[in-house]
Length: 329
Ligand code: AMP
Image 1 (tube, rainbow, N blue to C red):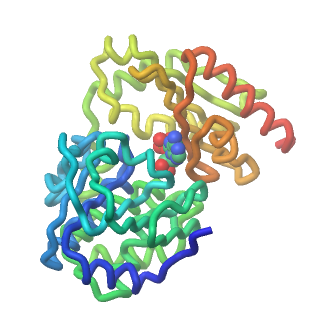
Image 2: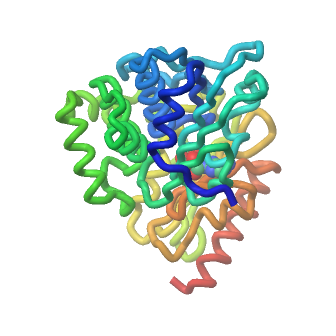
């Protein structure tokens, strides 16, 4: 198995090479966007040629981040790079087909990630599954190796770490996470402004979507599993965009007595996007998602599953039920 490189050897590659591509996963969350942006800005500070691609482009809800326009959709034709940095991404195909097919062979691949399901892709790896966010690893890289760390980078890293820790609330949050947040504030993060932009600004359609989802909320496994599902038909009727669904699962995860929350989203390509959250360390939703070809973290995982919406719901809820009863929670 490919073992971890040192942060110093990754920093050396950043100094030595010239043409960089920064990638993160499709359907990007705050950690994916924040890491990609912070890394892209760091490389620019070092005077490097850098592009930052995301298969789905820059989600509107992160457009407020300084310099966020650095993140673009991949181009139509292949390009050559010395280094491809793939961040917050556990398996190569999560970078997206369009991104992958437009990278000419020959680059050094560097993977910095924190998912337990990471398949150790790349030539230089730094996988720390104890890190609550890939953004926390990036902070350590920049900080320990004397790399640039500007105010726009601090904002991007704050967005990464804050969103992946549920605003510093999830059990993966460590004392070090708070120390890093304090340092990011010292570097110029405006806490009130960034938290309002991240957590208190939603398009009305997202709330309409939540209303529609709560209408189809169901409970299973003796009321300990709450789930809802979004069909393409409802998404079209409400005019939602993929990003509108982010975080809605947290609403049902918070229900008293609920141990696992599940969200099913019918996609246009015939697959169903599955999101699972667990509130009990004994229920490993990464293991459940792995049964369906996905992965993530023990308490927050996902998968893309073939089948109709109803069929996928039945199969996944049955699998969750098996895990729940096996542990007799
Ligand atoms: P989500 O439910 O989409 O917010 O994802 C929760 C966590 O699981 C994130 O860390 C994702 O990166 C990860 N994840 C989601 N879908 C997949 C997948 N198909 N394969 C591997 N990891 C995934």
